Length: 308
Image (tube, rainbow, N blue to C red; front, side, top):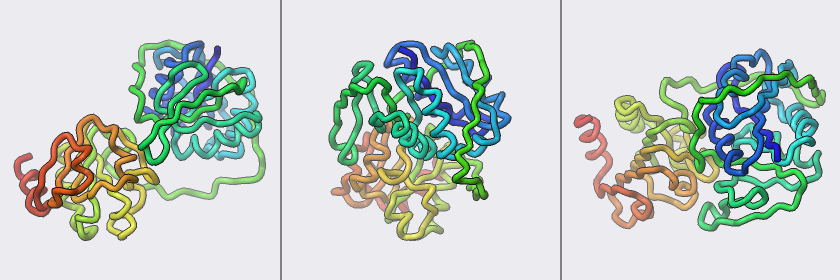
């Protein structure tokens, strides 16, 4: 078996999600290759070559892949993927965008969001917002898979794989990059943060999130929110944690004023330690919390900040 892992990167830095997808590939077993598709992405390729268990890094360095347009990347992965038994990508915005296209071109079914590898053809994935786990067995000749990276530990950078150029340029010509508006923050990204503090409807307004930001800055944490807080307009939607937001599994997750709707729990219940602050003793969040503080957040959070 030979497995192709599609690297997540920004043309300059390899994202930690790739380390975790390689871990999933290692659980399948076999030879692991990593595809780095982008423009001027040589540094990313060198980083990918250091991932433990990787034997080869393919570099598709072409302007067509600079912005990871799904139409172009999907063609590339389908073309190269014909030589592999498995194709894996992170279940990220990028992965969810291009990989179904590759699966369709290869005429195979995609297996989405796996959290466990039981055998080279058998995988576990959550559904019903994580309340049930499906075990899926694929008979396709090529297994096309997205990986929920929060379920796997990152591999170490102890390898020294060979780096080779992939002579491929696929420009579908049906889409073009216009621009992007990036959120700039000195705090860690929610997907990679080891500590996250999130606020919910109980924060009452966006101005009160400054309390959480002060705590986050002392802890080196990312700041998240529940869908209720986002829908209420307290904070932008890129802060949303949950089934329809970001799936996270930090070392420490602090939920402040979050009741714990099933959709939110689906996005954070795999966190190593969960702390909940809520004045409602019946809040569902307490059922998954390792530590629960029944208190008014407007008393508890300033006190926490002062003690820190």
